[in-house]
Image (cartoon, rainbow over all chains, first blue to last red):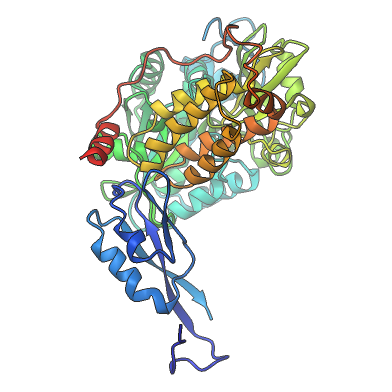
Length: 86
Length: 442
């Protein structure tokens, strides 16, 4: 996994927008596509419903996280902003 | 619940001796004194009352325990005119406190609602009473009509009747009912965004909380804090049932030892445990019955305050079997919207039933724990979380029984009458459960 080059130099402070995954449990119907696309962050419980890691998504996984959200047939995977100082 | 008795002393339940009711306005005013609200935009009064309620340290009495002053402060900052929603649903089957309060002192709740509405600038008050609970609705409607005859009110106060289901009283479900006639909890992606009825921010308060507000408005925060603890001031209503001679609703100071509250209700000397906070609450072991009835003290011994309920489990009855019955009931009360709740709660109920009847394999306790972990926090509302809390506390408080059952020894109380009362007959399940299960099957 390579880290992003460029951008903010180390030690610089600015507000940074991170993204985290969330499931809308009402919308979710256990299709399970999200866990196939992003097993690093999403596992399925014994009934097939996703358990997501809600910590900020590493930039290297953002493309897959976006795909997981976009390809959910129920639109149940949400990518939400977390504002963190850093 | 049979033969509910009422303790007609205290603050909320104060009343003329021997009569035992402050339900009419004249008696209410004679008991509590007058309460004068200011004109519509009296900013100084509003700020003073907000400060009084904040200083009183009043915590919500509906189970969440959120500071009322902070709730008001957030709502009065919103730009749109809010609506006040009074939650008198009392979805907890073991609870009777709100219906007793509304039968006994409806004007106290209405006073508090008008104070709260005035502070946050609301003109509409929507009171929600479960659809089966006609007695409470009649009591409130009579009180509203009585106030209307005496010069009218500048508030539009209406009574609403959502269906009587466990989750209907969850605040997002109430708001959903007022909007769309669907009493289903809603996923709140951002909790800092207020719930809305139409385009108005909704401030939802439990009925008892507002009755406390009516007393704070009359007597001030220092008076309020003369009872209770520093972190949980004031008195509170507690429904006490189970192995007690006088089941009913008591008004007690917060921080009163649990055993003292049970004694006032005439509890058996020997108990196997106490269920605190209702069917989404938690068990308290016999060695912890001296714990003060207040959130922090209960949390310190692994229990929860929840809504004011104490159920005494008699000696010789099986806490695992009672828990299994409650979990089966709670599984049926799911709104049926979220997979982990729809599939997880019945699975845990089945595990518990196998456990107490001695039919389970030796890994059942681990399975209950891992399924509880799998369900916790994964619904749109807190319904599954409450069930999991109850289950975990049962495995802790009745751990010896659970292990004996898991080794193939069925419950010694097998066949004994079960203690906890559950509403009879399965509830009419909303479309949700079937839909979710059907979608899975297709």
